[in-house]
Amino acid sequence: MKILAIESTAGPASCAVCEDGRILACSSVHTGLTHSQTLIPMVHDMLKNAGIGLNDIDIFAVAAGPGSFTGVRIGVAAVKGLAFAGDKPCVGVSTLAAMARMAGGLPFDGIICAAMDARCGQVYTALFENHAGSVQRLTEDEAMSLDELKNKADYGEKSILFVGDGAELCYNAFSQFSPYVHLAPACFRYQNAAGVALEAENRMDQAVSADKLMPVYLRLPQAERELKRRLGH
Image (cartoon, rainbow, N blue to C red; front, side, top):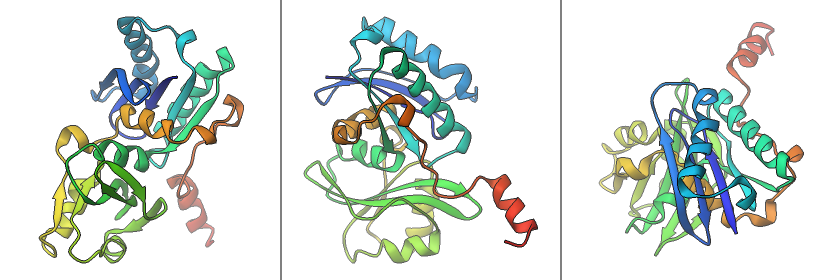
């Protein structure tokens, strides 16, 4: 079963095709151009170079959040459009779980902390345990401060590996308190569609039709938060 995955929740944008746990093709850009400019052309070029047609794709996957509100919307909209044309099913996966799934391939046993910079002194984060390549979720996706994360990630003497675009922020905050913290190598640290595809393989039971695929936000957009604050809510 071939899965085409898209990741556009942060600065990098990427796409990948996976079949039975094997990445057949992958492409990414991190040039500062908007995802709406780069994503679909990148998908078409990747498929063409790999000799794969859209009709060959069995299921479409996307990092449905958390992440940049605009980036999440663009990714979900792109997958809905691609899947709708062929009446193919879709799977929306957690951005954080997809990053942990990629990091699970590293020779590391311990806690994987996936973290994205949510601005305003917060991170989007979730904790996973990795043992011999088997990744198990420990906490739900949440938005929290670094101090709150320190309390939640206190697993005694277990090693903690930070991944995500908020990984360095967390590592710098944690390293002065614990000798057990590690920063994932750059090639495994950031959001990537290959991780989305691999995570989707484990979430086939959550597949939905294109019209039912929805983004997942952990907090309101900044404009709505500002309005609620002005209104005293």
